[in-house]
Length: 118
Image (cartoon, rainbow, N blue to C red; front, side):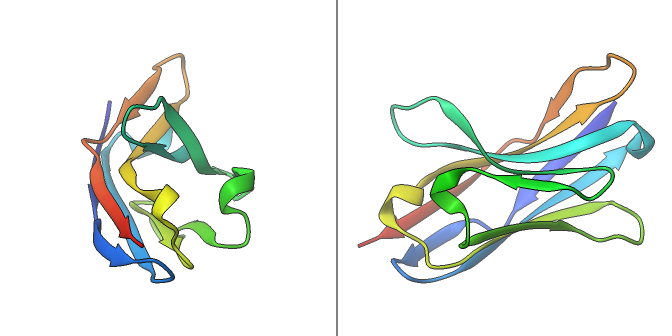
């Protein structure tokens, strides 16, 4: 129902910044909320940040004050995760995921690798 493509990952030194993008297409009207998840090596995928269709945001405690989730308000076609003051423990594959209305479930992107070196 909704297709998602992430970009912007890469290798960065500790203390650096990256901005991830998630391009959404398809039935955009069905997006109720968008989240960014991180799957670190050997760990479960965890929610890092989320934004609702109304603009409310929430963050994992580990990224509060460092990461910011946002979207292009004009068309809601691109969602961003600005990551500042990166730490080696932020390393992982980052996925965006859209929670959909109408019981359509959740759509996932393919993920983008973020590696933070110490």
